[in-house]
Image 1 (cartoon, rainbow, N blue to C red):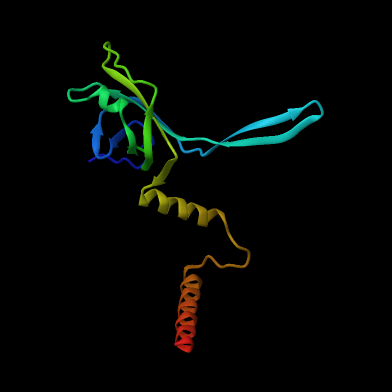
Image 2: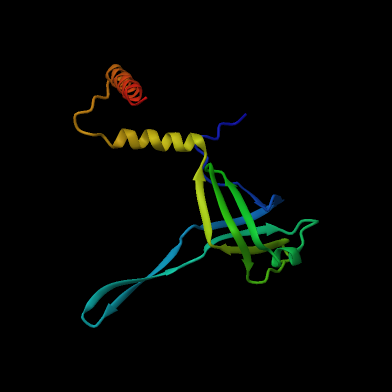
Length: 170
């Protein structure tokens, strides 16, 4: 079995309302919820304006047997889920397709864009744990010991303090 620890790109698995679609390439997502425009006048930069913006997921699908462009064009209020090589899961809820989709006969591909009120990204547990470890390694509070014995003793003290305060409340 190959080691995929360092893999950060190259594969994407896509489902829409539980139906799996073959991704030919060009997967993109945008979880942004606002768009900003700089406002400047003759006297300088004044600030910015901010407007709501839909989340967006784009993929180029392979036009395989069973793929219905009419069904894709009719998508409304669907959940789009993508699993990426880097361990992220992208979820778009209450999405709809925009721009009519067409098929390219030369390579049997269909670019599809979904938009909706919410696109979120989450990491798998191992990536989250790595991120937490890295954050703990970088952010240090002054005066805290990093010695494992001191940390264990501190944790035990906190547990005892918690259990004694719970007993006094009960």
